[in-house]
Length: 200
Image (cartoon, rainbow, N blue to C red):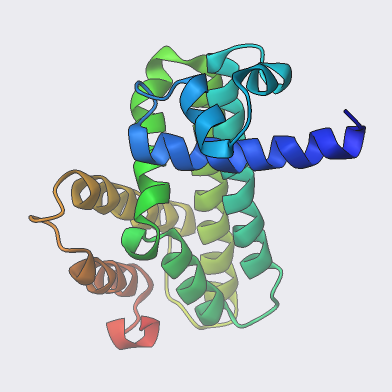
């Protein structure tokens, strides 16, 4: 197998593993499930990943990297702080990415027993909060926002979104996804002395 072919197959396997994990959950995902979904042999899966645990951890690392690349693109866009804030909140909120959130919630629940998953999820959590803090600080600096505690605001905003994502994923009939965007915008507006419609 050439190096390039191995890299292509690895990327495809990781994408497939993320889909399978989101659908079946960590506890129910087997290497055979990933191999079947990818249309390859189980031996090829083990060629890339020595164990099931390693496969799951690398799939989470892959998913994290995809999320963080999107986040970094928003931060590098050079647009006004309010625009970057809107885009970050939309990107992070669960409304448009239910499968992704299902995978992350599953990963968080396994983190206390899986140090590698905990390390990966911690990196994602901290990076998102740092991104929000950075944008809030920029907005305070240019007068777009009023906020005395950018770090606290970032944690409160992200934690609210996390909680709503968990509840809407676990109880979609109780917490309608359509309402989440409005609730998040109201909370962000209160934190930064904005009007909710400025975030729509």
